[in-house]
Image 1 (tube, rainbow, N blue to C red):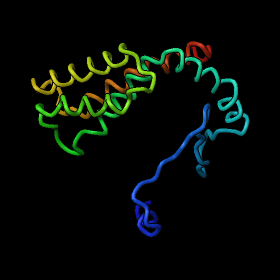
Image 2: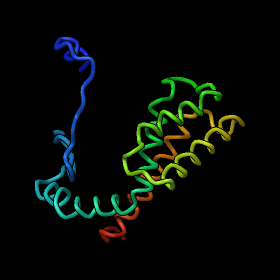
Image 3: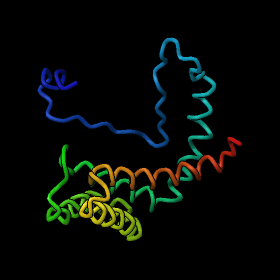
Length: 156
């Protein structure tokens, strides 16, 4: 919490997450279908490794999602950015990812998402650059999510 950071004299906090880390939700009293210890073991074991393989195997989409996430984080909290600032936003989001193994394809996918959102927001087809980019980001992640569940073979 910000109050704790202020108390400790901290300006920012960073978290380093190890490879194949898994987050499990805190149990909630009264949850009608809580995760069991077995559920967590399965999800953080072989299924977690499968997830990493799928995501790492499609690094282009994951990198495009990361670039798009950085674009979203650079936007004003409210309202739309000045459209003349989009090139600076793009350069800032892309420069953070240079050297991170991003392919030209990933940058192109993220740029296409930004260009689409610029087009849609300028023409009032969509109200918010943030919302549009969030939808584009979700599309990159949803593809990977669908690939994962297809590989797991779960569902009907």
